[in-house]
Every structure is written in structure tokens, then in C-alpha cells.
Image (cartoon, rainbow, N blue to C red; front, side, top):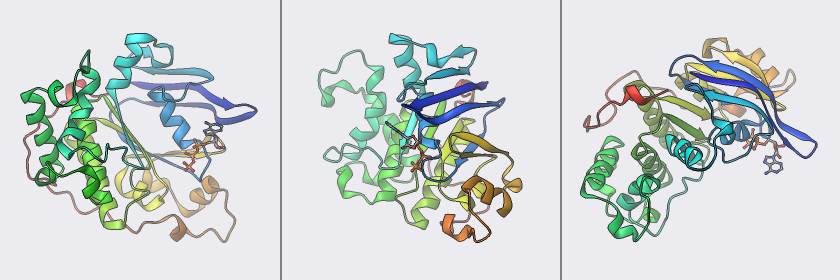
Length: 278
Ligand SMILES: Nc1ncnc2c1ncn2[C@@H]1O[C@H](COP(=O)(O)OP(=O)(O)OP(=O)(O)O)[C@@H](O)[C@H]1O
């Protein structure tokens, strides 16, 4: 389903991502971990073409997404939703409009932000907010929300794209443990309920262990670990982080625990779209 084949990104002499190959043969929630500068963001950003790759192939549903151009590339970018550490909301706009912006590149023209969205899109946006537990905030300006709420708005916006793939680049790095848990629960729920692949860069080992089906560890642009979270022992972590005997896992912990499986959000109104997921 997703095949990375010798994917490399060089910035001048430095290879931020170096000959990376791995495959996902079914939808999974994958955590990418590694110290700062290991190449995690670059890896994700090559998938949706925010960063051009230097060489290699990323084959998804039989097509090399690195070779797409023009309309086909834009369509692919629409199929990849990205959640950023800093949320990337338009702070002066209200929450509902921010969520509807996830549909913006499905419109051929942008005559006016206020008029471009249909009644159906407004309803979809409200459902997405409800699913994330923040429908009551729909009319507030985004800037009035807490960081955790803003990240949930960003995830609702991502859902509006009906993406094939969700890329989350350190989605909890700016959040306190309680909000980090809410956001990770939301991403996990999108994976479980909609059958989407979620690729998530994380700084914290415990979060990767708690939420991911598979963990990829990067060091100096290369994959040095690829396996189940249970296999991510302290020794393996030391290898990934390049630390010596004094390596302390607590330094890579947010101390969030994944609660026992339960229905997370009130709505249950959005239709699972597993058929379009990769
Ligand atoms: N636009 C750029 N120009 C030059 N070098 C870059 C650029 N973007 C990233 N790099 C370099 O590539 C390497 C990998 O960066 P990247 O941001 O992918 O790492 P990361 O693992 O995501 O780090 P962090 O956890 O700090 O975000 C780093 O050495 C970084 O300085």
C-alpha cells in the first residue's frame, strides 16, 4: 500500500533523510521517533511534497507520488492531511470557517471565504467539530481557544479533506499532558474508526508505545528501528537517541497514558470512510 524505496533528501552536503525504505501493507498508526534533527519532519514532508525529495520513490496505491505534477500533485496533496505542531489555524477567523478551510482546495475558485462553502460543508464541519468534542466552540475566533482545542480544530479541518493519509508532525509537542492525551486519542480514533493510516512524528517514547501499532526510529536520516512498540526497550531507545548508559527515558516522556478503549466522542455521526483509506 505504501512503499518507501531508497528515499533521500539532501540539503547541500547533508542528508536529512538517507536511503530510507519501508512498507506499510495495511492501514496502521505509525510513530516516527528520534532526536531533534534525525529527519522525522523531512520524511513526512516529502510524502505530501512540501519538501522535494532528492531521490527515491514513494509508491502509494501503485503510483509514485514523488513523480506527480500539476493537478495530479495538487490532488495528492489534498489526499494527505497534515497536522502541525503549531496548529496553523487562521486565528482571526472563527472555528467553523477554519474547519471548512479543509475543503478549500476542492473548490476551483476562491471568490470569497464567506460564500464559497456550501450548506453541506458547514454541516460537515459541525459534525467534524462534534466528533472532536468542540462543536460548542464553532462560532468563537480560533485565537480564543486553548492550544489543545486549536489542535482539535486542526484535526477537524484535516477530516474535512477526507484524506487517504493523515500526517501529524509533532502534534502534541506544544501541549500539556492532558491536551496531548486528548489529541492523541483523536488521532488514534481516526485510525481505528475510519481505517486511515496515521503517520505521526513524536518526541516522546511513552506516547509512541501507548498509541502506535508500529514505531520507526530514525537517527541521522536513517531508520535504525522498525518494529512493534513492545520491542522498543530502553536499550533500543538508547540506540535511536544515540545516548550512553546515562540515557534517561523520562527525558523523552510526556507521562501520558492511553486510557482503556472507549467511545471517545459524543457524535458518532461521521460515516467511516475506510474504503478510501490507505
Ligand atoms: N530547509 C532546510 N534547509 C537546510 N537544512 C534543513 C532544512 N530542513 C531540515 N534541515 C536539516 O535536516 C536535518 C533533519 O531535519 P528535520 O527537521 O527533518 O529533523 P527532525 O527529526 O524533524 O527534527 P525536530 O524533531 O527538531 O523537528 C536537520 O539537520 C536539519 O537542520
